[in-house]
Image (cartoon, rainbow, N blue to C red; front, side, top):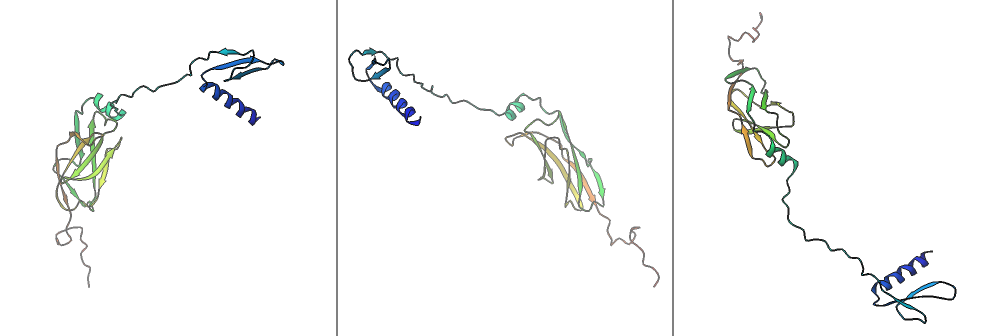
Length: 185
């Protein structure tokens, strides 16, 4: 079976490259094709071989869904730090501060929020995430702010800075009611 298939393929490929093709029927009624004339053969005109040429490609400017969404989306009307509040004093935090951010309208697809503590990027919020907990925020005055970044990292909106203070009770303060008094000796 494979031999017959190979012979057919060879015959067809030789027909495709031949300039002239002849067809004849033998005494048993078998039809034959050849590139050489045979007694009683008729010349067959073959149609031109079908070909395909790829059209020259034109450079196209591709945009992602994220870019399309941000270009179509309405601008942010409000970006704010909602917790801690402005000038809030936080006591006994053990260096941890919970931060909440509000964005109106909702954060667009492909955009993210960067939270800055004392002008240093400390958290990245994506999707529906609006809260985070910062660690190692020690005693003293600090500022928080946030920026909305698009898919390319460009700032598209930002909040006002929110000042706050972390206070810690000192064990050196003898008037501190939280320090246990020594018992009788």
